[in-house]
Length: 487
Image (cartoon, rainbow, N blue to C red):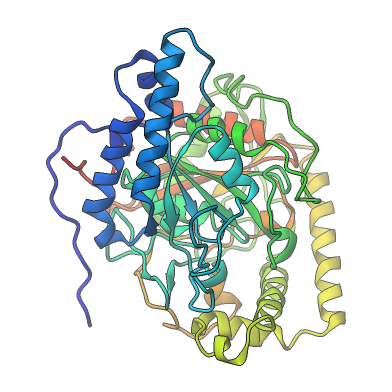
């Protein structure tokens, strides 16, 4: 067995790479730091740590530095009385390698994609970030077509967790989460089809948000259908709210997107949770294998919510495990993608994706229609349940980060794919907003996440509750960055 890589030892010095997006913007505003300085610090961090973590599959160093220079000029003009800068002007961000980015290949973790074709289109999320002045660092790793909750693929290899490089960062936005956790950019955009923002954010000690479906426009739409969402990874809830103000802007290319939302998610973020009705469900009524350390840490966090004035009631929402609905629809989507590939391309695919596709082949049209009907019943049930409560709280993932493994390490079936994350996929089916916020560490030093689920369209409320917990989190829950900063 090849030994796991180790992270280099770096001096413990203050570094712009360790700043949040909010802190960087304050430094730019005052002239105490510049976008060029921050971008150079982040690029140095990437040079130092990406060989061990494999969070980036493409680093666009020259274009990032040019973008930072352009931003620095805008900030200089602003401080001299010029026009205001964009909401994220000069903030380094990364883009998951499923999301189109002009001038950079979007390889989708797959040998089936030709990198040499023209790349002339920005997806809506990329376009909004670019318009806001963000510095696009490059593309972060994903399993092939975002097909699983781990980040490994034949094309880009194994991505690793900064808290322990023998562990997975989760997936499918594992590269995004590992980058944010280790200071390789304070913000990242990921996708979430069954937990793919929240799983890796929880495993890496970040904040992650799956917004209400359609709140962040997408183009092209996912072949996996309306379970697929886009959302931010960040180090703080304030940064997630800041990023959502940019990402939620409309784009006519997405016919499923929600009407324009003129609200500012930073306003009211500090209003707390006193008087909110919170349903606390430790297992959703069906999760049987919640790790004891996860259960204990999340229960402690829920007790703090009550101390903050929330009206907490322990209650299960009253639905059965919808794993078979999720994986059935997902496998059918994999079969659809499989049939867009030539036989030569199919031979190049990840064995996990191939197995998913062949499982999807077994579903009849009647089977798929029944799954949609079951999904609709679940969505209706949760709309009604959320009339009684403002928020539902659960663990984010049932287990801490496990071993980083190669593609095809185990036979593919619903339990292997998602059985260990029973709290994430139900809310892709129901399309509700859901966040994860770090709430503890295991004895081995691995992060644990607390999940807030809101009513449909309650994205601002989810962020507000997340911030209330984050602000009150006990001092003994140590969330220093897992990697010492680069010099």
